[in-house]
Length: 302
Length: 312
Image 1: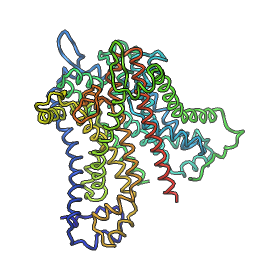
Image 2: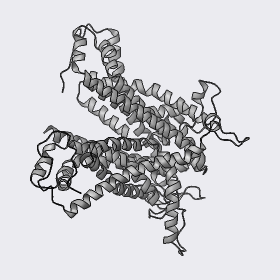
Image 3: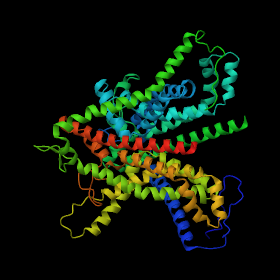
Image 4: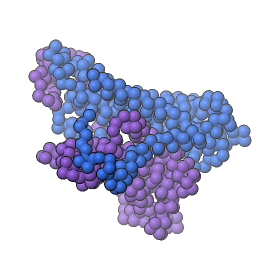
């Protein structure tokens, strides 16, 4: 069965089959088996994880679970406080990180003239992307929490996370700006637009789907983040009493609550939260796929 | 480099205030990443070094006794460092072959329809929050490990039973977590290999498998090495997934010992530590940061070398 598999040739090519097509070699069969084995391990793991979480978690989900906060008196458990905290963290982080990330991408792609400065910025952006979240957590705890005196609060967490998702937004925006044809720029500038006017009215709208995809990917990272939030945003689980005051109070996101449940060995509740998280991750993934797909076809048509 | 376009009002005199402001603001945004990395580095060094001198560099880095709460506290983190290195290495040893093989499957073997199903699935694997991996590790891997442990160490009086939370469990979780990174990057590297290399190899009479293993994989070597380095970075920095799976007591990194990684040491003690103990935790953070920077610089050099060879 080894050599008669059709090769998925990306481009039309003269030679796609070996001239020894009929011959079977033992080592070939073995390696083919190994390839299939490894691929199926990777896929089975994913299916297994999703399946296990959904089977264990869905029975835990009820209206009470989704719409109340934990109460020791009644002995009930709910995650609505954590959902609200997660929303707070996502919105504030994006409010900070999006302008910075998009601005940095515009600088790199439109204003920078190459040379050392750009190399340094690109190196640091890469570095920032490689720093693990626990280091961001420590830095946020020391700098935003202690030095700036924000303590355990949603703002501390959001500030920490905005540094973390900055490279992601910068990179996706840069890619989106690169796909805008040079003729758009020349055209706008040629009829007398100034550079900022050209960026504002031509470049950013054309690159918008790419930027939005980057923002959606950033939401995915924020929702799934835990280590960077443990020492910065704390673990509060109550509903906000005051809309803006909540920013300066501690608030645990869904992942933090999941971790705390795990630590207390309340695995049922943990699986309930895991299902909610997986549904969010799936939705975000689908949305990003859909947008980038739409974006690509638009480019092809034009 | 693409040709740059300039506004017909591009002269220095005709720029309005808004134009200037826009340029300055974007430049500031551009340098924000530099500022962030610089301040993170600075703060990690400021908060990590005091303990080094208070305890003594050798005592802290090469000491093997970790008793932060004792009357005469001892802060040796050698086992913690060793656990991180050995754990990451083992995770790479398990994760990379599986990941590269899956990438080969996606790029070379699988029919397109199957690729279109499997690739999104792999991307999804990358998006699953790390705490969920931890949760599954505790509930699936740990009981399994405990059964194996009971069999192997039955009758042993010296072994400390861990309930399955040991190095192997943590390594397996880590190997799983680096899979998406390794698969994605290796696959793009394999797809970037020019078609004529495959054609030439096949025309010389090599079988398809021989072509993959002796022509395509060597040609994609630099990309695969990049994947391994990125995977190492991800594995050494992972905290939440393994903090409960690994057992979290400081021990020699032996397969069935309950162990503590650099990351899990910070996670599990940060909340209640104070004084010197807290400073030592920041030193652990600094050690981790040093490892990460080493990996980043290696990665940067690799990418630069790759670009140079493409330019030629």
